Length: 126
Image (cartoon, rainbow, N blue to C red; front, side):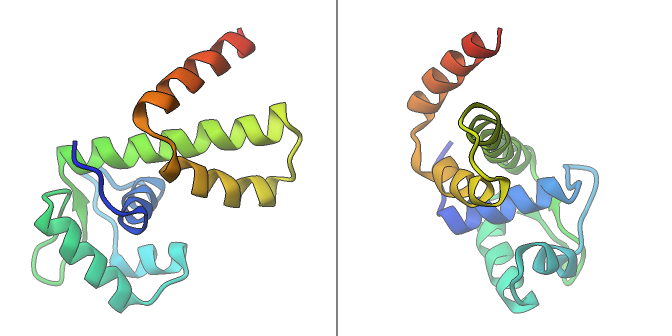
């Protein structure tokens, strides 16, 4: 799957966090509120995500994820959750700081490095 920008990954993750799937749509106003951005920013990002076939949106309608978009969004969200858990539970980092840092780390780590790191963490938790 082709990598997209950190910002666009954040939009996919937000849609997943709001309960968006290939069947369940979300409103752009809810995405804007969740991300603390304007509705215009959401519309611009959604246009790009539509071009990349990651979301569907009928003219001024609600937004659903394509299969590829759902897979990508849940992957980003899963990375975030595992990183957040590691930072808070294993390292004792303040949850607010860990939330921000997990968000940065989820984009920066390669897929291969993340898989190896996740396997290592699973051994720790076993």
